Image 1 (tube, rainbow, N blue to C red):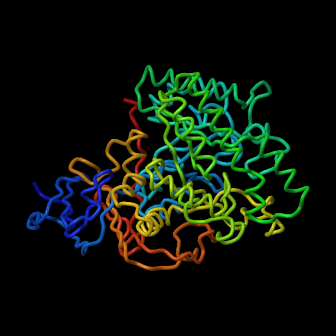
Image 2: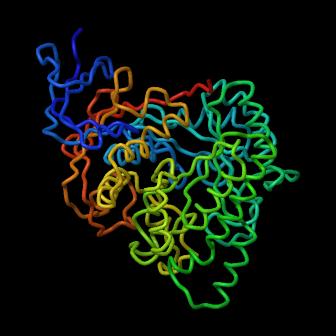
Amino acid sequence: MATDLLIRNARVVRPGDPSTDHPEPVDIAVRDGIVSAVAPNLPVTDAARVVDAHGLLAFPGVVDAHQHWGIYRELSQDTESESRACAQGGVTTSMTYMRTGRYYLNRGGAYRDFVPEVLERMSGRSFVDHALHLAPMSAEHIAEIPALVAEFGITSFKIFMFYGGHGLHGRSSDQADFLMLGPHERYDLAHFEFVMRAVQRARAKLGPHISLSLHCETAEIMAAYTELVAREGILTGLRAYSASRPPHSEGLAITMASYLAHETGLANINLLHLSSAKAVEAALTMARAFPRVDFRREVTIGHLLADVDTAHGIGGKVNPPLRDRDDVEALWRHLLAGEIDWVVSDHACCRDEQKFGDDRDDVFAAKSGFGGAEYLLPGLVGEGLKRGLPLSRIAALTSGNPARRYGLSGKGDIARGQDADIVLIDPDARWTVRAADSESAQEYTPFEGFEMNARVTDVFLRGRQVVGDGRVHGDPNGTYLRRSPA
């Protein structure tokens, strides 16, 4: 049969396959958007298009399991610009967290009305494939979980443990208005328990690929420490923000969430963006305490590359905060030990005029979150290789593991029958991060001036080239991915 695309002389890296840690060049054949063969010296005579990789590494397209499209900008605009940034960095599947309340669509109500509007605004605008996670904010949302799985193929849900008692950006005076909940609704530990029970019922009835993700921080601890930092008046900038949301706040929330998972019998728990040694240690302790719960542990590329001193200004404000260098090194130790399951960007584009307050040096007046999908794969390859992280582990951390966890059966590998999502990366490139070079609409980056040691050169989405020589081109052809719980 005819081959639509033949990529020659690519050093293919496969997740969890140590034989590809030092790969030899092979060819990749693609037909109808699917990988049809991976082998040396495939015939070129029946290929409609031939691309020579010249010995570059070929990674499976990144499955970035944690993004926030539309949080600070109109969703259709954000979909277009931030999906370009994804493609630029080798992300071919974006999984974005959505919820009702302030930001996103700035509305409450049922998800049966909310989700169709989200999908309509994203339709035809994305340069990469995409899927949704949803946060059940109300009792109505909890009741909708089976329908969301069946009708929209949404099989992953989220709890923000600090909502209800602390603000998204720090101090909060009115969380009820922020969450847009009814007068009799509460967003607290009891609500979290009821979400877990509903997700577990859905798993038992519909299929095992349903999971719950948790943002683990403790509102009461953060509120008290925010007041303490302000009263002492010693710390400023990112160091002050980190102190106001201390690492033990993460550890305590992880402990409570884990016991609730045990109590409710919920097997699939994803602990998101662990930022500190204490957070990871708590997560590992809970995994030992409750072996029947299948915990997965996530870190972000921001927490692996930047700290409170090296990030470029308070544009690095994020939840949970960037930490001290000791915590960065602890995350790397756990990563190298195989105790972290995937690495994400937590990409949340927040433009300059929204990010900073009237006093641009006041970290508590700034909004939380920043983009970073452009730097996820090159950052992990460059820094990971320096630290001895095998290539096959990088492929697992960025693609294979999240694809399997979240039920993306066609994603996560370069193998026959898989979607031809392929990223060519030069592991010997040297370049400096400049926000002006990014496809994102965000005009700054906390990684400004960072030296990178690997570069994405070419990206293929289901066999269609979306990045060539480092530049995004063509029309948006990304599709919404409905996932099966089975």
